[in-house]
Length: 248
Image (cartoon, rainbow, N blue to C red; front, side, top):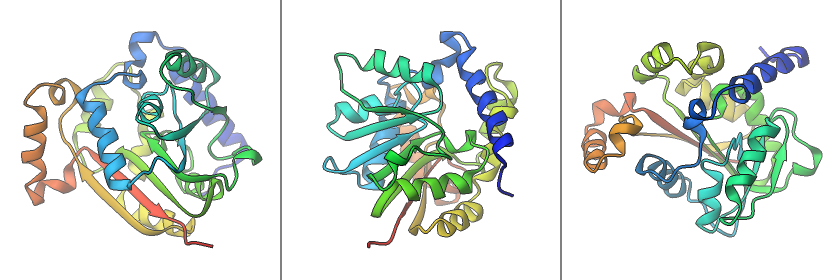
């Protein structure tokens, strides 16, 4: 069911409070850090979504720039859209001396008219499950893309049981802010993307280790072994959701 303006406003207030009122160490999951865990996410996004440096890219829900800044450092023309002005300030602070990144403060579900039909790609990293209306987010993404533009969103895999343990037992996480994971099941995702006008829809699953294990020297080898076993792939930790609008 589509959300009302009042419901969106209340939800956005909750999400902003979730990140803006926490201590710096509690926001470590969205801080900029060049670990093997994060590098793997970027490599998977670039390779599977076939990102190009000559494309105009928008990172929705960019937060502090955890992925936006590294993408810019790799030579991609990437801008950021974020609900929280405080997180955008942090992004610009961390980007100083590293990259120049155009940022916009606003709601993904109600984009500024200046962002419409402007981008070749929209990417996102662990943002959809924080939104109140995921189908509406796909439709907003389609409005911000040029004809033939593509979407690539990295999200938790709702079929991976480890997330439910993490959310339940991690003090800095809450089901109120993370429950959108339940709306990212394959059938729901494909239907919502198709209704938003996307074609060539695909879901690629990978990974299983938490950061403290993936960042070890043997982490990449363990995950590679896991991904080589087809029956285990449905419960991988991450899913990269891709689709493309038809050309004009």
